[in-house]
Length: 607
Ligand code: M6R
Image (tube, rainbow, N blue to C red):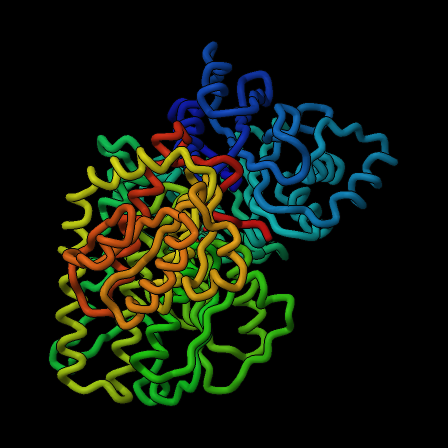
């Protein structure tokens, strides 16, 4: 989704803005632009396409002491130079970049047109710059504030005017903005990754807050012009964590980081003495935890799949009814919040609009919502009633991989905690912990065999459609496998419960639609074999992810991907990794842009 960068300081502004925008490329975008305050006023350059196109356009240099930049992911209006940000007013004295959506833009546009304003773009964002120019009296801060009163929707904005050289005003309502405080310089961004090359000191703006940056420093205010005191917080990511470090793609790097990511997620959270888990941020007493009668997980995409595994597992081993729901569906179905329910909002970015809105709606109705996020200081993490961080390190590739296995790690710890409060014995707890702690090493073993998966992908990348089938805990893994394949390789893929294919999807089965079965040695393996036979009888090709040494399935399937042996409930950690690698290699084989797949954004901050 769109990204914002602002800079005020002694460095070459355009270079800092471009560097920041490149750090935001991973979020997904289709055009980019910058405005810089030069000696003779604001200079704006924007281009459709990648940042390198913008960079080429800037070759003659753009000198200035402060500036704002933007990467746009089209919502209102096509991908074009005119629709790219920054947007300027007719006089060229005001420049605005905007993330979010202005819902009343049509009404505002009509009113401005009646006043004679000529619009240059089809975007909702352009109304903001014209309003600011129209409402400007003697202060940019006042003009921005007066404009914000008129906007409905969500926004993170950064604004400059040549009438007040050296000033940048930022404001946030529903779309993140964070300040980076450097040595004699100040940055503004929608995402901390754009700051890391310059500083690790951050000030996170909350909804309803503004920042005014000028030669004297910065001040924070609310929309009613009241002073807001903000803490400077330390960003706990290192610059090298957001570099590719010799890998061809971030996705490959992140797949290979999983053993460490799982270790970090589990780190310090296993209570050996009690054979249980302790998760510091839950903000719930043991008594409150014991009184929980049902668990509801809300999430989107890959986080939803991790939540499904978590829900199944908690219900299975802790006996607490658990249900996982797509966040975007909750908000508009007027959910009933039952007493003694615990809600868990799962989100890698912590900024997903669907999950955030669902969480706000549930909390409004009295629900207690825990956040399970990766990005520290993200909106979901801040607004939830307690929560647990994944500590996976930054996830840059659009296709989520290490966040999934880290989310599983936290769910497995939660399940253990609840199970030990109910009917899990000490011995049950001990063997669960032993199996869980072996997972990172077992993931490494799978990663070492990636060449075989690359070869397999080479043979299957030419197919137009695939089915991913699993049962029980492997059903959400099948959904995740299908999501991974379609989002980065553009091969159509559908994930189903293996039992459910006979209710419809089996109509697709035949030589042209390979079926990927997740059939490790768990309690549903025999059932999966029966479903495999149904596919084979219809001349379907079968790729099976199995426990190593499974001769029976080897004899049935056309191809097998072995994973190390573990206990039945632990397999989701191991079966998902080959599917990630398979998708990655299929995408490579098809020449796809793995890290920035078409139409997708990393952090989906619009509904
Ligand atoms: O940041 P979140 O975990 O809330 O993101 C949710 C989805 O947008 C995300 O998982 C998406 O489905 C990924 N592209 C999947 O790889």
